[in-house]
Length: 68
Image (tube, rainbow, N blue to C red; front, side, top):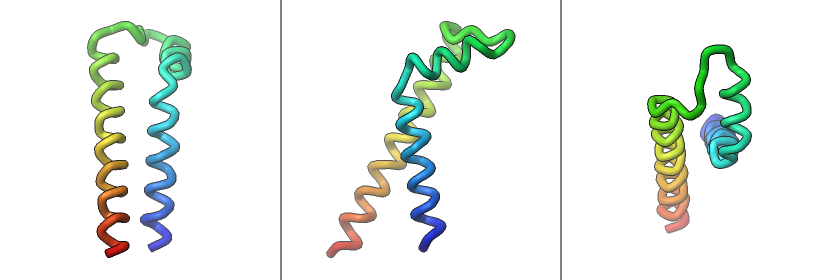
């Protein structure tokens, strides 16, 4: 059970980092050869953010069902 908590906690941290677009852009622009304005990079970030949000909602639904 602790592993689930650790996994959820790390996913939450990643989600919060992805929400800060200025931070993500700063990190990406510091990488050689990476253009944070490239459409493929933007698509990837959007996909990761949606995946993270989906995982969070699943975790919340699971917690709600466990309470019953």
